[in-house]
Length: 224
Ligand code: FPP
Image (cartoon, rainbow, N blue to C red; front, top):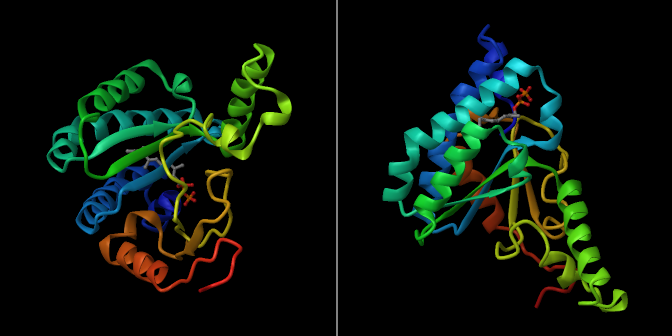
């Protein structure tokens, strides 16, 4: 959800107001994905690197997270959205973490869009954590080292039941992965938009999805 800070700066506002304005684009994305029958939407809300931001900004983002969960839980429920998280949830301060846990429980039976909030998430951290789990299985003799497959790693990631992303959208003109879903993105399509996240509303998301729809995916093979 890139470009919040720049969006605020352009208006002479403090950076945090950009994060505040991010919520409308989150609403739009959830709504449109639900309408289009998109099954999974992951929002990169806070990376393992974002902890190095000023304390006041981090604390504001954590408050926003709680506000978002409290203010939207009923609407998410009504929209049949199931909430999941990815990342090191134990890093998140107690209050927003408890709000998250409640929201996860509240929506676990929903069968529409799965909305995944990436929080204290890093692609390298996720792979590291998966390797640790596999190492424990090797040490206990459950698996032999030469029996480790890509599937072994994939099934030890944070959300093994969630498919790899088909499309990754990066807003605000940035053109890099920034430690997002490094394992899962091996064959993802990328869409780069110059639009800042708070302005990335339904029409922009529609454009991205339409662009994706016009692409041929070969996964390293040949087209029929
Ligand atoms: C990136 O923009 C945005 C973030 C690091 C934080 C995003 C978090 C939220 C919107 C709030 C919490 C999440 C939810 C689900 C309510 P940036 O600050 O890097 O912007 P810049 O690139 O313009 O500086």
